[in-house]
Length: 379
View 1 (cartoon, helix red, strand yellow):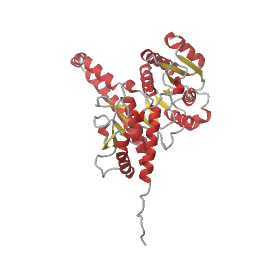
View 2 (cartoon, one colour):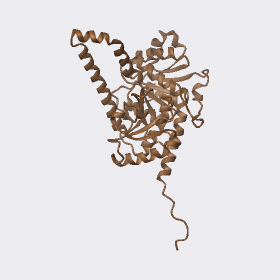
View 3 (cartoon, helix red, strand yellow):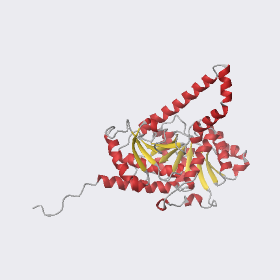
View 4 (cartoon, one colour):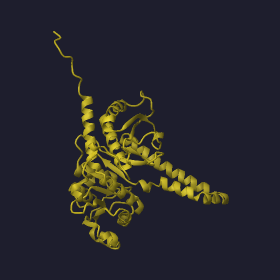
């Protein structure tokens, strides 16, 4: 996907990860933790490898099992480096408990490869809370970041087909400075992931009027508006829930509590509409005939809203990039998450993100500084 950046955004692509691999992009993959097990992850690696010959993989999990699965696929065996990590973080494990015995798990090992500079991006289908906790512990937050965020691509009416929405669950709280950082990070993600030279950013609120919303939203609005020109995005102001899938903005900023509820509501609504369509077309012989006539259009619609195509939430605000794949992802979903990781790695996203976060911290500090007092002799 093409991208457009200014010279100030230019940064080398993960020199450590590329060293010794002929310039290939190295992706670290946690093969365990997903609902479908390592077979689906390896199948996803195969699909991604077939489409992207520049990718090499470091695959983490029980060595014997991974060698058996990867050994059946000769076309990817030479591009996969297997790291033995017998421990598995399940979906039911509590992050606070997992951290105490995290070493030796496939998730820890996958993140460690990014920390050591062996890989540019880590991809995991595992427990979201545990993945964020380990990522913060091992990669640490970027200087100036108080709260990292999870960003997703939300199907929309925009030409790209998606909007960037963050935060969708990394932290339920966010003050005005956090929201400013989310705006900066979201705009950087839109430039790198969607190829938008000057993304449009909106702040999610209960209405578009300036007098509406909590005090931190009003403060964030002033900070984001002041940062827009220097950060190369357009701030459109407050937006509402209906804009999540609209074409008014490219990036929607909110706190993790609101964002996660919006995400789960959207997923549930999409499933409900799909179920209603199935029931409607199966209602009678004529309905089934109508479904047959509309098959091409229905398949086009299914492809556009297929969650597997946009599988992958990106952890922003860390010293390294982590892509969280859906726990129930099949081979297509895993391949989509790896494709996103590849795009971000190829564009040098992490270095650009760090620059934008530093700019946001400077902007917030300037806004918080007291105004200079009057000069001269007041005698």
